[in-house]
Image (cartoon, rainbow, N blue to C red; front, side, top):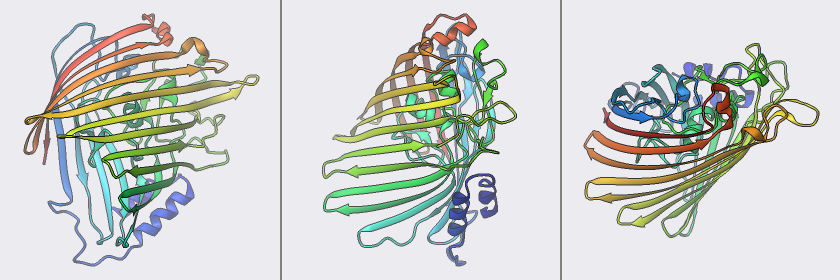
Length: 426
């Protein structure tokens, strides 16, 4: 397991590899070692019934915002997301997480989702320290939970966290410090990262989307038709888990998070991400480095009687290509925000969410004519029966994206999706 985790870091930033080596050097005793037990193995999966009305899905190379696309409402059975999670314990303070995933629907894929080591030494009287190193999700989403990174209260995550699942999952070395000041709790996280140079490609050329597919390690995602501006200048696909910086000065990226839990049950989170990629770097497949940065504010508030309010707001900037003469080919400022309210009614939990999103372009090849804006509304119901969870979700998305001219579609599109899912956990 340790060898596998180390191989994931080959070709990435040297500091990340050094951090992994330090973590793997922790001592182990026979009593603490747990490799294949009921505690270290877990499997999850879901089966869905889906009916959708709208344009061709982005999964098939279109501009559709949803996981599926169909011109007519038609009920279909689909395999959703299935995962096998292995969490071996090497010592009381050192463990690992490896997640293999199978994603069904209109394009079935299987592969590695996460693989990282975790170090948790003994907590001090007021300060706790932990560290992770490997391939992993940054601590951004307030909608996901579990090692399999599933959405807790609905089937489909927000536009923000859909994009995180697509293009923001680096190889990183991360450290977290938590402490308490009276009734106040603070948690600070910082990480250096690599292998996320192309983050921003899909968001720019396709726009925002809402779905629960994630990019698996070493897999690629299709791009929609790009038009004449980028013929020969950009591959028709993107590998989100990739270093483009061969032959260029390598600069590890970073992310940082600060979370504050107030004496009342409200938590605030600030998050900063910068992949520090070279926007002029390009590989043999004509995939470019994208200098992508964003800031996020998140709020989670317990409202009493089991009700909860969640919100995330993100604003970012991504650039790619040469300067002609002063503007790069791509200069995209993107924004999105959502608010979500959950409330139990007996044994059934209800969730409602509203999203807004846009992109603003000022590049020399991709300018303001391609600006996108849109919104979505969702309502979901959830019921648990032990290891089984049933969900029903209705989702509507509106978007105005002029890039649809490349497939001779109307700029403004409405899409509606109704789906039911049965999740099982072993």
